[in-house]
Length: 282
Image (cartoon, rainbow, N blue to C red; front, side):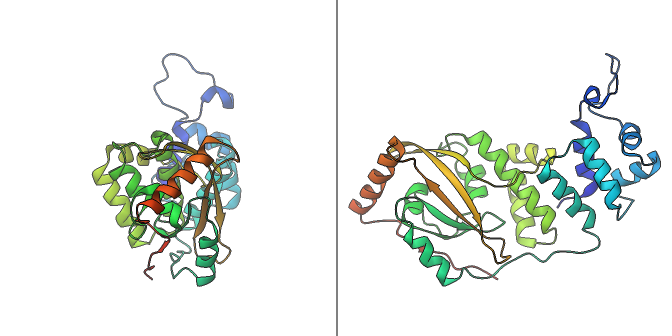
């Protein structure tokens, strides 16, 4: 699903030669750095670097990886991804799985004023509270947020910042593919998205990686309007690959009032999407 050679090629193409002290002129036709320039700046032979980009060199040393990360200007997330890709042939990490612990489901149900979800590395929603179901306007079991974003909501407009959301999702899936290259369900999801979405194909080809973290998320809900929320991701400390995701509204904000209205509308309509806990496949 992901490979060291492809990642090196895409990172090389985005480096500004002038930023690393290489003069350029209008006759330069290469986007980013040339292979020999990366090799020279990293202190490795041109032949060895070419073999890395062709997938013919295995197990580069930590010193080589450190040098490449420096020359290519990798951030912390990209650096970690580079190391994982380089170690893939030595050790294949088994994709995490299992069921959401009952204690976590109780915690989820205690969150009553904000949409809250438990998600895995594939962006499958494994459990959600009542407000999460009302936010998405659909049952939680079977919801995958990547599929929802690219295949169901590209034209409907639930995501107010749809384009930036797609960058986040593809970047996350790239990271997941680097961690779990032999996960068949993840490979199937990526293949489905690539077959069905031109934007996904274009973003996937860039090989960008992003770590999920806190930040602003905005939704245009068909019943209550714009919801400007803050997303906080809490990685669960059991190596399950799961995260608790909470979408909260600032106190006294219009979004807080609109979440309260959404909850009331859900109650008035018979609560079509109560707190639900999907059954997790092993």
